[in-house]
Every structure is written in C-alpha cells, then in structure tokens.
Image 1 (cartoon, rainbow, N blue to C red):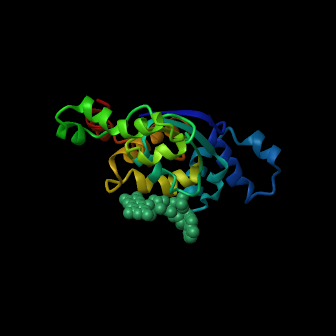
Image 2 (image 1 turned 90 degrees about the vertical axis):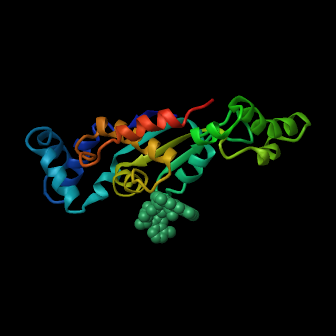
Image 3 (image 1 turned 180 degrees about the vertical axis):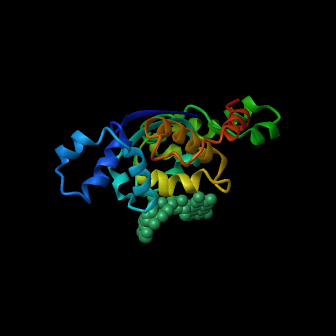
Length: 212
Ligand SMILES: Cc1cc2nc3c(=O)[nH]c(=O)nc-3n(C[C@H](O)[C@H](O)[C@H](O)COP(=O)(O)OP(=O)(O)OC[C@H]3O[C@@H](n4cnc5c(N)ncnc54)[C@H](O)[C@@H]3O)c2cc1C
C-alpha cells in the first residue's frame, strides 16, 4: 500500500478560517485576506469547527493516489459518496498480482503457488482470447489495483475518518485511512488536530498484509 498526495488546497487551515470569518463580518474578502494571517486565526478556526459550522471545511480539498491495494479495499472505499474517484480499469489494464493478508498466506502450503493459482484462471481465459472486460469476472477480490480520490476536509473529518479509523472497520481500509490522516495532518494541522494516527496499527499492517 502506498499513498501520496497529488494536489491539495494551499494552506487549508488558513483558507477555512478566512471563509469562516467571511460569514459574520462586514469586511470584504480582501480586508480579511490582509488581516487574517496574523493573530489567533487558528483558535478562531477551532471554534468554528467546534460549533458545527463545518461547511467551511468543504472548501479545502485533497487529491490522493492510492496504489498497491486490493479490490476488496476499493469496493469499500468508493461507498463514501461525498468524494470523487477514478479507479484503474480492469477492462483496460491487466491485473498484476494479488494483495493478500498474512492469514491467507500462512494457510497456504506454497504462498507463491497460491498467488499464481489465483491469477491463473483469469490469465488463462485471457490467453484463450476472452476479452479483458469478460476475463476479469474470474479475477479474485484480492487483485491489486489503484485509485485516485479527492476528498474535502469536511468529509474526511466528519464522515470518512470516524468510520474508517474506527476499530470496527476492516484492516486494509483502516490502514489506508491512517496513512491519509498522516498526510492531511501535515497539511492542515488545525483541522485534523483531534485525530491521531494509529502507528501500532500501521506497523501491524505492514507485518501482516504483505505480498508473498
Ligand atoms: C464497519 C463498517 C461496516 C460496513 N458494512 C457494510 C455492509 O455490510 N454492507 C454495506 O452495504 N455497507 C457496509 N458499510 C458501508 C456503510 O454502510 C457506508 O456505505 C459507508 O461507510 C459510507 O458511509 P456514508 O454513507 O456515511 O458516507 P457518504 O456516502 O460519504 O455520505 C456522507 C454522509 O452524507 C449523508 N448522506 C449521503 N448520502 C445520503 C443519502 N442518500 N441519504 C441521506 N443521507 C445521505 C449521510 O449523513 C452520510 O453519513 C460498512 C461500513 C463500515 C464502516
């Protein structure tokens, strides 16, 4: 699993603070823009978020590239409707390998052979001339894929992170959510200040969710 940020709103904390202020003062945007970089705007933004005026956070967006993940993960991920996605197409791109949990690999007599056997069916039918878009019906859910996703800060803070950082979420999506949190915390430390990255989980994920 690898996650990187492709693009994001410049200084999301400050932008959201300015937008929050815009609603309740008579000053113009340019006046706010001139004044706001100094003097307690971080505290103001915290207050805005605490009072639930969180639509201001919709103005900050983050675009992630997430690679080396399974189709199991992307299937869960795209259920979050308040975000935008682009998935690698299994109609157009070949499945390279499987992303498998350690439990599966440990249960296999020969993990390399398992990886191969699971792919064989899909590849075999592809070789027989079945179009890629049809052969993919035989691909396992652990097939490796990649996705680009754009989330706004409100969706992340109020919906995606609470659901997917939670211990009841599935392991792979929990790990992705933690890596996404690490990235956005660096870019917008005020907005995401109350959420902590679960380093123990990420360590455990790297140990137990590897490719053979
Ligand atoms: C632990 C866990 C187990 C799950 N198990 C299953 C499962 O077994 N089967 C399954 O199908 N899904 C399952 N899900 C997916 C879950 O039901 C949600 O589809 C997914 O988490 C996206 O959440 P969301 O709808 O809140 O997010 P979004 O789609 O991003 O929506 C964000 C918020 O917008 C509002 N909203 C969006 N659309 C509507 C709407 N049409 N009407 C009203 N309000 C709306 C809601 O307030 C919602 O919380 C599971 C999720 C988790 C975290």
